[in-house]
Structure formats: C-alpha cells, structure tokens
Image (cartoon, rainbow, N blue to C red; front, side, top):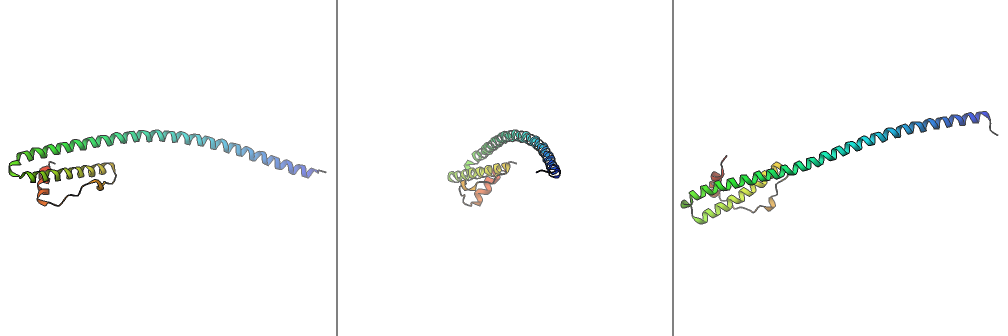
Length: 146
C-alpha cells in the first residue's frame, strides 16, 4: 500500500521532471532560432562568395588582356627597333635575338601573371634558353621602354 510520503516524493519528482521538460523546450527553441540565424548568415556568405568568384574571373581576364596588350606593344617596339638596325645585324643573329626575346617575353608574362594572381609561376612549360650575354644585353636594351 502507498503511504503519503511516497506520494509526496512522486509528486516532487514529477514537478522536477515537468520543470526540466520546460527548460529543455525553451533551450530547443533558442537553439532553433540560432540555427535559423546561422543558416541566413551562411546564405549571405555563399552569395558573397559567388560574387567574389565572378569578380575574380573578370579581374583575371582583364589582367591577361592587359598583359597581352603590353606584350604586343613590346613586340611592336622591338620590331621597329629591329627593322631600323637590320642592316647592322646578320640575319641569323637577328632571328636568334627575336626568338630569345619572345621566350623572355613569354616567361616575363607568365611571371607577371603569377605575381598578380598570387600563384606560383609554372616554369615547366618554359623552354630552356642558352646563355648569350651579348644577345641578352641587346634585347634588354631594346625592350627596356620603361
């Protein structure tokens, strides 16, 4: 048979369980609101990331275009100077200078692009150039327009 003390103890335990359930329900609602806020922040950051990627692509394209224009300008300046000094240079020497200059220009463009984009330069694609100090000095003097 149940006595009054057992009923009071049961009532106390039930009251404690009800209070715990209320606290847990409140905590659950608070956590749900926090998750909703974080989901909204994640969506906002994803939109910013998409915009950043689009902007980055446009920047890369413009940098490449500017470097190509600069390369074309350097080539035209070099060709103009080479054309005026063709009489003083042997045809084979001129061809070597032009090839050396083209390799250097390509290498410099790749390095400049790597610097701008913050990526390491890929030197594996560059052909090896033999050291020809006389030819290198002439090419540097002719291409040094800045």
